Length: 219
Ligand code: E4P
Image (cartoon, rainbow, N blue to C red; front, side, top):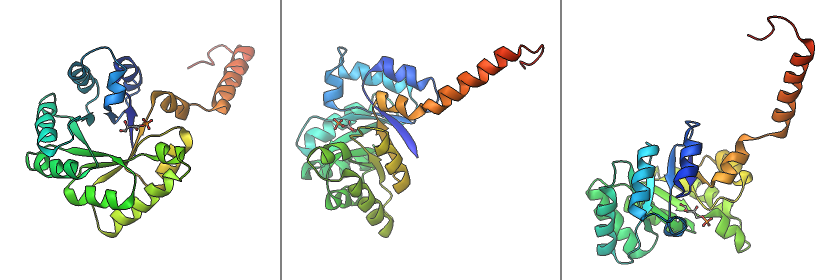
């Protein structure tokens, strides 16, 4: 399972990428709007830090505009993946960009039929938003389960990226289901690594070691 970071904050990406366990990045216009630097500059910096796929989103709503923007985004670096919204025009753009050899992440997916359309159009990644579905009182993770099943039924190669993750439980469930990618906010990413029993256990080991004061005990 691949872990992406869902952020456009270069400092946060730099800090977490030091672990060597960040497989890719997703940005969107809202995340980029929070950062002061121009979008293109930010994406250039991110692509230089993380060698895996880095999603940059188009803001046009017609296929020709999306293709134009997508081609420009793809020039930033070879690891750019162009994000197009899951609307009819977006699916048209997927086809054209794919013919150009540009990988597309089809975003804002909220249903199984939408995910089927994305796969049939040739999406490299589909991004179902689980948190936003939970927010309106539906079960976001059941959409992931359904898409996994349907993609398996028809051998669709499009990767399922679980987006709009709100907490560790979304990631655990995504892994159980067999989603290909989880894109995770920095705060949740850090929380996944931590366990109080690990901290308590380590503290005790170090304390016992200190108390014993054996010569040559430390390797
Ligand atoms: C995914 O690529 C999106 O950037 C993201 O997961 C959206 O999440 P939100 O619902 O927290 O805005």
